[in-house]
Length: 287
Image (cartoon, rainbow, N blue to C red):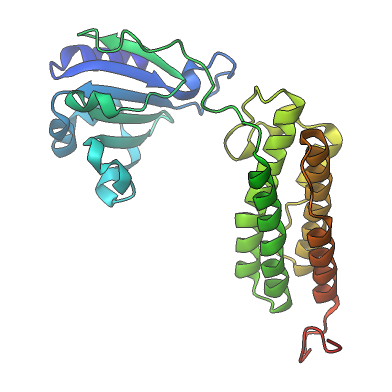
């Protein structure tokens, strides 16, 4: 694929430079069969590749493709004039290729994991050596820490409401959406603190198992329930227990304050709602 890309960029007169981004530039990532190719082509004519897509055929037989700029997904990118094609080929290879206008190069945000594959005009002489600095977890500010804790416990009450109502999809959406996101963020900070905030724990925590203590990893695994209501309840309390442990440790290490009262009040509420009869006329009849 790299040979095809370089040949393509060399023969196309309007393509002036090509950059390889992402995991294929990261020496710390062990290559595997699902690793994709992320490239940016600096060109004098973006419209040529947007309007006539015959150029795709030279890279393989397409299984499925997306052009997010055509779908309005990347409206924030309209000012750059770029065009991105996401290509999954029948042979299993994946190519994400972006055509970026040369005359707008000043607005281009270079990823830290970038390697110049071709530069016909010396446009990219000052591109720094590749590094994963854009992906390293940074230490939180105390406000970020407290906001994460507040969001975790706040949305946990939504899960309890959904479970009591037997609204499976809603409860799972809250569980695997905002609450899971806050747990993952706390785990990122935990890993960062253990490693002097110098490592990348991966998108959605995909490298967590490489960095977490075995006990913490095993607890994290148990926070993934199936569609059984009681199992979701069990997982919710396991998630709360894990979050609490991590948050307390991080607060102690960074000199922050963990809101114990907020945690205790919400945890008590969750336990109460779990035991609340399905025909209850009031959440707290004695209050």
